[in-house]
Length: 265
Length: 268
Image 1: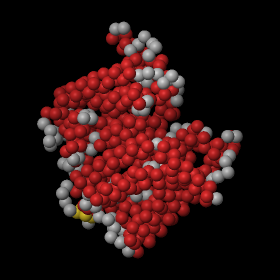
Image 2: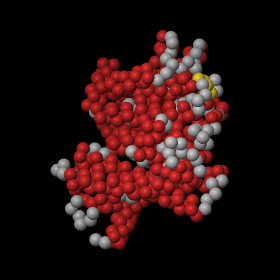
Image 3: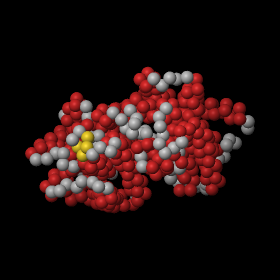
Image 4: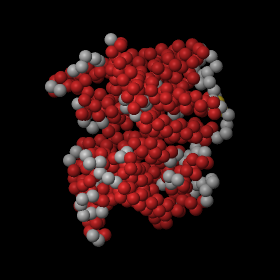
């Protein structure tokens, strides 16, 4: 079973290799946004070594890690492509095949993400860490927690993005819906502004939503803002959201698949 | 054909396009709602960012919002007139571009008049709302000169952004690719200019001022209107915005025409 899904991963990896231009253009725009957010945070700190108890070095590291993770999260099947598959009916063809569609998409994403990460993101970001004075986690322990947390974040994002994409089965026009998704993933996830700089009411709201699990938790672990027993708690929160988001995805998927059957394809 | 005839023809082609789009009224409204949601999202992000810090390179929240809305205003006109240029590659690949060459109308004009995207109402609603709100807070002191300058700078901004779209589309004549270049070059460049240029490294500021002159779309003219300093640049630079627009668009037009002469149909 797993072997079959791994084939999709392999295929996606090879396919990503054929679109060299895509990889470079994606990397280029990722770096432009890194430039933008690191400039913004440099200007916000305005020469101060720390703000709100967080050092400038930690903040800069936070943004670089965040941009790295958003490169990874952006390398999978994007929302518009899922919507397109629903609109054109491509997705219903997949229903006839002997595999589970959400799982197949996930494994295909692993392949394209792996290719993009190995050939583009990792080399560039390793160099960035050497050029700029950024803080690396000092213990192996933190590294392991960061990697697990980033992976859980990836799964949360995947479930939410696919769920939003599947809403296209019911909504002909998805204008406002997808913008709510992009806004939540960019602001409430803490991808560009860490939650500790939010107004406290907004921080509370963000804490009760799944989006913080995508970027804020892994970033904060990396820069050492989450330590000790809080590490386990944070991973627990992320794991909780993976389960919830996965359950929602399964529910939406089942309804969507039934809908296709009712309409006769 | 005389210029008057061209203008008449433009409105004829455009009104046909508008009528076609209005057939899908729900889609039309949802796109406007989507646009306003997206821009409001960016504005909220700016607000949260400045909640603790108050200032970004001597710009406060309302000044930044004005800067942002100024960019969105000219972008709204740009969508109406030029946004479809980015997908010239699709027309070339499908072979549908050839029909623009066999009619007795100027091909650049014909391609430009082919589409008139009315959904940019979202941009207008957002930017005008922000202008009214921020004008009250910042005490801008609007007078006739300032208002005329706002219009001139907006035209400059439309020509600069439209010029870049035209240049990007011209790449398709050589490589049959253009849409991707929009997402690689123009989309990130537009995002950079949502924030005051003063925060970027000098090299980047210089590039955004003189290579891809997006600084003239909002940062320089808004600095004139709000009476802000523009470090590293002469203080009068904002007034050059309309001129830069005309020059940049003219260059873009000639590149497009040059590419057109180079173009050979894909034969599909």
